Image 1: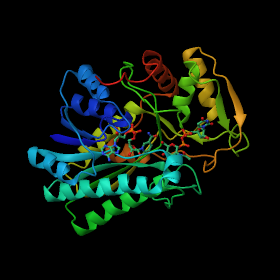
Image 2 (image 1 turned 180 degrees about the horizontal axis):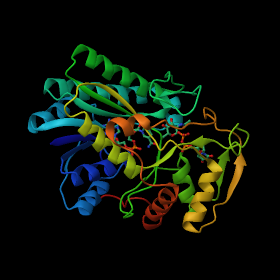
Image 3 (image 1 turned 180 degrees about the vertical axis):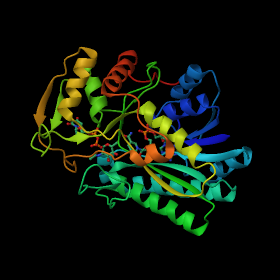
Length: 340
Ligand code: NAD
Ligand code: UD1
């Protein structure tokens, strides 16, 4: 089957393209490269010895998008990663986030409907659970949002569910990711954040590389095992495999399918720092800083539904996540080289 991957040049998208190609799918990617490099896809092609049909295009270009489907009438499903994802930036530039994430998805769905493609897998986030009342988090927990990024995810989830109500032949999959980290074991593709990283693991790897002086641990007075924030970190390759499983399971089923993709295990910031130091035999300088506004104390998944229905569970552990994240950073200290 031919799968269109929006945002396929990005961090999770590139790893998913590799898994799709390895599983025998034909892959087209639409990406405007606003937060990624074409080189990621060249490396995916090198890793699996197969080609990707890359189309540099903004989802806001409705006409261009429609042409993609008319030129490739065999596209049977879409995995939709394309979106802006920085929480702080979304608070400063809400209109840009709504424009890009919502209008981009609207255009995509319109183009899909016009060409009779009704199978979509969407990148949602654990952020839609807001501050959970209980742990671990199950898919039927109440949802809420505290910032424009999270709200865009929630709105898109609802829009896709409405689409299914209006036409029950749609196959809608909402994957709520917990905290993806790490990189492909080859060290050829990985996370390449622009500027100073917001997220924990890329910050740690840049401290290890000497690009940043020390890690700020945001708060040590949370009601958690050691006072620092607890999250459910999962290996990006496991996450990528979850997309292939979700695509396969929903191939012949219509409906709205919601899955948590996480390990089910929480780790604190200090546990992550220790795991990184032990896995890679490198010291990470850190200091305790004030809490980051908007952070919650603890968040981890009940991922048993994905296991029951998709047959998916994570295989990599914390040591692999830390080792592979460092292997990527070490081999690509400045991220991907500039495109020729
Ligand atoms: P990323 O920024 O690496 O990838 C997103 C890709 O989308 C980039 O290649 C970017 O160039 C592209 N893009 C953005 N807007 C576009 C547009 N209008 N038209 C075409 N391409 C566009 O991010 P990622 O970490 O790979 O995340 C992928 C998806 O998963 C995002 O939707 C993100 O919100 C979601 N998500 C990520 C995480 C995480 O921790 N990384 C967690 C939960 C959910
Ligand atoms: C963040 C976003 C979330 C988004 C996810 C993936 C916020 C509030 N949440 O999740 O919406 O889906 O990224 O992009 O931004 N930490 C430090 N020092 C750092 C960085 C992080 O101590 O320099 C701590 C945080 O306080 C948190 C943990 O590490 O306890 C993980 O942080 P992060 O990697 O940013 O992920 P989330 O906050 O879970």
